[in-house]
Length: 221
Image (cartoon, rainbow, N blue to C red; front, side):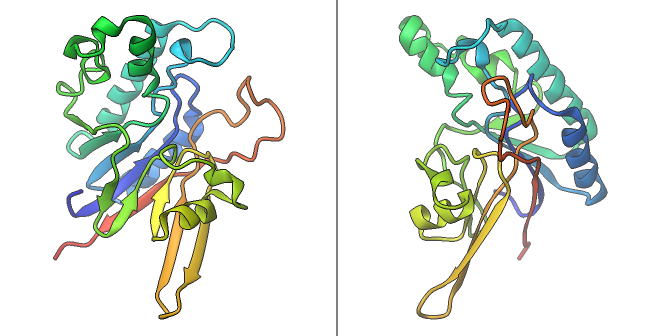
């Protein structure tokens, strides 16, 4: 990633985003004059093509809501760089094609970056499961490593799996974990909270989710 200050927004799950939380994150990013916005996965929920049993969803309504949110974010950061790393919910689209229309899986016309027109919105869309490095800091969505949330908190789970300082999202919880190795090197891992409904219909009670976002600054040399 290029040097500069980045606003990291994760797990909006549009159209199930929380406008108050999204607006607070955006206002914070604007007040800190970020150089770019990094969308760290699960921006669009893709509920209507998911495998989980739930009430009927409308795919085109989801797409329209996602486009509206992207356009609003671009209006708030008209000159800043946008980078979009897909998460497990975006992966529902190619998985849907594999299961239901395999002849479309290789077509660029059916790709998410096409129907959301990332080129027209000047958004760089990264490959699935890609590790992104902010300077020396590895950043993933979190679904790439299983069972992060089972180790006390997501940040500790990330440390135990990655054996490195790192940052993730996915678990919808903010957390931080720090350890020092035998040589005295300090390593910290972080998990970023979500910006969506904290009590969705599939998990209406006792959710440990909380809203959150991050600012990462890559030093210029």
